[in-house]
Image (cartoon, rainbow, N blue to C red; front, side, top):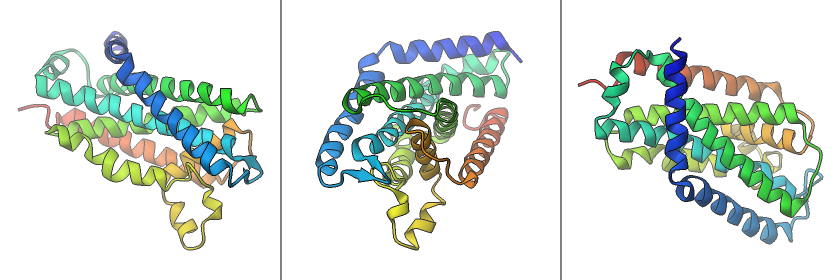
Length: 252
């Protein structure tokens, strides 16, 4: 393990998104805050509680997830893709770094941005909802797991994309629909069958439920959801490692 190489790549990724904080941190923070204000106060006036939780508090974990997932994905996908089209990816390929070091460096930087935006969103939301009980261990687990999965998925998208439009294919046509169908603004338990059962195959449902359970200190959901997320993390990691190892679309 080239620890120095991983640490250097991680620092490079951190410096990259801190150079433009208005675009990488402030913009998504404002967007998710607007979601909170609009949906929270318009729908919250009609539906006071969901599953015994005030509606304003209920949607906070989902909005934290939105900021976290989008930024983790965009950081790794855009960083790798830009390095490809600028020709600077060759510097990493000739460095004494294997596929594991590249995977760790890119995903760690993306996770840092995603978690930072997610925590800032949560802090803003607390100004509206006030402090409440939190299951710290479960919250940290799902923050880390969700950000990791989307960081690796972003890496896969960056490896596959050959044009700027292709980078946005995954977030626009897959991630966005699954997110809005993932229980961010409503309880999946309220859906009629068979939609309720079908929704359980959406991994975002389990990420949002896990964060909601931790941030609101609610009873734990089915362990099947955690197993599904761990399997998704392992599968995407193995796939990304393999593509980096063979130099997929990185070597001419």
